[in-house]
Every structure is written in structure tokens, then in C-alpha cells.
Image (cartoon, rainbow, N blue to C red; front, side, top):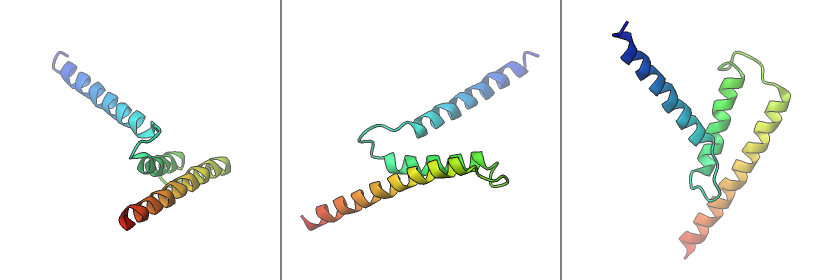
Length: 90
């Protein structure tokens, strides 16, 4: 059984790493330069998770929440595009 112990510890470490990555992915900080990407990736992850990777229907309330987040992401993209145009004009 002693041979299996290192494998079990290694497996637990991988799970913790995934958890940390997910927590970081969902954490939104004001001024975070990755905020737009995080919003889009979070919705993609949640859509897959909520639909059993596309095999189950999506609840209407969840769809409305996802749509709200995506509208916010679209506003962020528009703002960034305007900012880029302004910087290119300077």
C-alpha cells in the first residue's frame, strides 16, 4: 500500500491545482486586463457544465444570466475597441 500513497498525494495535488485555476479564472478584479477573456471563458465553461457538455437542455434562467454577462462582455469589447482607435489616432 505504501507504493500507492505517492500517487494519491500527486492526484490530490492535481485536483487542488485545477481548483486554484478555476478560482482564478472566475475571479474578476477591477482593472484586470484579462477581465473580458475571463468573462467569455467563464460563460463557455458554465455552458458546458450546465448542459452536460451539450447533452442536456439549458435552464431559461441560466440562459438569461449568461446573456447578461455576454452583453457586458460586448460592452467591454466595444469600449476597448474605441480606446484602441483613440490610441491609434494619437
